[in-house]
Image 1: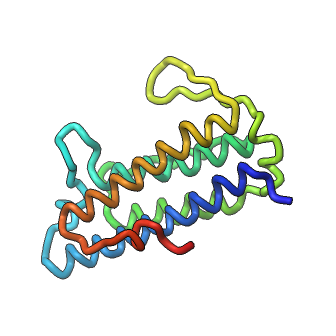
Image 2: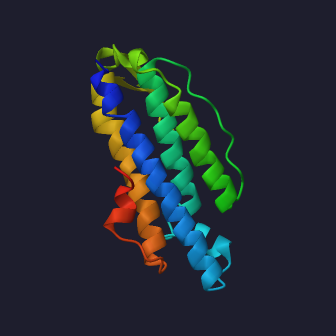
Length: 170
């Protein structure tokens, strides 16, 4: 039997990262068809104090790999962020993260629900969680926020997307 937190994380991350790749493909096609500088879309923001589309994708990838690694009890891999990533770099990052999470064995998640997880989310202050709480109340909401924001940025900039694009392949 597969560990419940494996089922609640890895397939979900895979599905939504796949949808993010499809959203990026449609965004790139939109830029090409309308002769829009790709960087104009990748650096688009919904509001000046928000991260741009490219950064939303990178952060979603960071959450998928970080949450998965911590739940599996392995070291979180470090992938340096490109300064101004293009579509190829973002797609490459998604592929790298998908390959990483798919490589995590389901049995590594056997004790994930009760595993103690300590993080420092951008501050010197630590936060402590139990695995199930970490996934359901922190990791997944953070991940979905950034995937949703990437979708919204593309849609806001005229990319023809719908709910099926957001949901990806089930």
